[in-house]
Structure formats: C-alpha cells, structure tokens
Length: 409
Image (cartoon, helix red, strand yellow):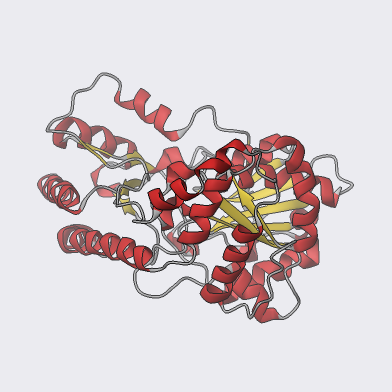
C-alpha cells in the first residue's frame, strides 16, 4: 500500500540505498584532479578542540576498561543525562533516570536498533509495517527500516514544507501501520528546527495511531541564537508523560567527541526498560570510562558555548561572502550549508565543477535523498557543505566558492 499525501501525490517508498553518500561521491569524481589545493567540506566530523578535561577523566577511570559495562549504563551516567535534560529543556525532574535513560554506542546504534524495538513492542497486525522518515535524511534511518523488515516511507522535506516533513500530508491508513517516525531537529542537512507546536502535533499523531517517535537531536546544541525546542520538552508541556517519545543525542557534535562513541536515548520508560533487554543480547555496551567522560561533559557548558561560537563565526563568514550571490544562507541550527545551486546546473554538476575548477569537495544533495518513482529527487538542486574545518580554512573555502559562483553566474 502506498500512502497518499494531502495533494494526492504518493509518498516515496524506497529500499535501502546501494551505497553511502561518500562512496557515491568517490565514484562521481573518479580520478579527476582538483583545480586548486583541495579543501574537503564533505564530512560532518568536528575539528574543534576536545573538552579540556577529556584526558584527565579517562585516566581517572582507566582501570574500568577491564570491566564489562552494564548495558543499562552506570548510575552516574544516567543521573548526569537526566540532570542535563532537566536543565536544557525545563523538565522539572520528570525523566526517570533509572528506566528512562540508556547509554548508546553513539546515537547511530540507537537509531538503527530503535525500529526493531518499535516493531517488537507494538506487534501491529499488518503484513509489512511502515517507518516514516524525511527526505533528504540521515542514511541510518533507512537502515533502521531495513533491519526491522519495514517499508521506508520518505516524505520530501524541501523549502515548501519548511525543510521538515509535512505532518498534514500523512494519511490515517499510513499512520495506522506505522511503527516508527524518524526526524532530526535541527535537520541534517538543511538545519531546520522543529517548533514546540510541530513536536506536539507529531506526539499527538504518535499516540493516536500508536507509533514511536525517534527524535535525532544530535545537533541540538549547535544553533545560532535560540536553543531549539526538544521533543521531550514538548511532551512535558503536554503533561501526559513521555509515552511513544524517544530522544537520541550524543557527544559527537556537542562536545567534538565523535570517536568516543557515547550517546543516549531518553524518554518513554516503558519502551526503554523493555528495549534494554533486546540490547543486552544484540547491542554493544558503552565502556565505563567513556560514560565517565560523558557524565563530566554533560555537566559542563563552557566548552559547548565555545564550540557554538566557532561555528557561528564561520556562518558569519559564509553569510558575508555568499549572500550577495545566493541570498541568505544561514540556517537556524546545525553546522552545514544547504545551498540551492539550480542556476549553476544543480547539485551533481556543481559538485563536479567545484572539485575540478576550484578544489572544493562538497556533497551533492541528491546523494542525501532518495529518487522517487517519478524520477525526481528533492536533493537535486542542492549541495551540502560542512563548516567543520577551522575558521581560516573555512574563509578560504567560502572565498573560493563565492568567486566561482560569481564568475559562473
């Protein structure tokens, strides 16, 4: 069954992509040489400084590498996460630190296994359940649908929808067979932020039609001015607990600790207390020294504020140099630029030419989205640029990009 949106157009139903975006980019560029000293703007891998206490905390807890970590995490870790969520989202102590918080081996692991937990706990009497995700999207969401044996339903999220899925376009028939809804705020790659009202509308749908929300909030602390509302904040404001709501986050973006592989899931205590039993059989534990670093990191905001300041400095550079050609380019959150380059031939063409003519390696937007049966892809007009490089290198890249766009307009 294919869902029908509010305009009568079918939603996209897709299988797992054949390759990840970076493998596809390598094939696209092949043996082509860069047209200048290369600047890599593709991978969202933080390059800012580690929190200054990282090594100290690891050394203090080094002996715990001998121990098998408990799958449910240490009491210190769970308490630190619950306290941070309270402070960040004003939850007034409502998160159950014992049943409503779990450590993850990075948020990707939790996102992948989440759909399995949703499928098994809901056990909907349908031949093939649905998992809804935005398009473009983080490719792990499609992997989650795949491992759960579910149909991935992709909702185009472009300028016309505010770069978030249009909740009004979802048919009751689709929602009734849905087990999981994946969404990121701030969005990757567009940087759009879900409002409190948007979150609450989605929570209402999840509870009415009985599916789980997996809110990917790993960019929650990378924003321009206003902290993005969170799904737990929206649920708390509704006053009916956290049923069907799971927030996933990590230290990768917030604290530049992508290699630590430490994140968390928080929210629905019934789901998490049952999910942990499956994860105890199938999922990797988080080493106790990593949990100790996480507990310290979530109690410190100084390094987070400095991290955010550096990203905002780079956005200011991009805005100054690119807006005369492209118009405003700064999103509300995240650390990517999502640039409409239709005037220059679209994402694939511009990606090739930026590499061979300007030495800039970017990702075509089409590689972060899926093409529908009608042959259209909502990422086609765009390129994604990571602002993870140091400030000076970012300025060099933006100057090259602005010149190339101006010269080829």
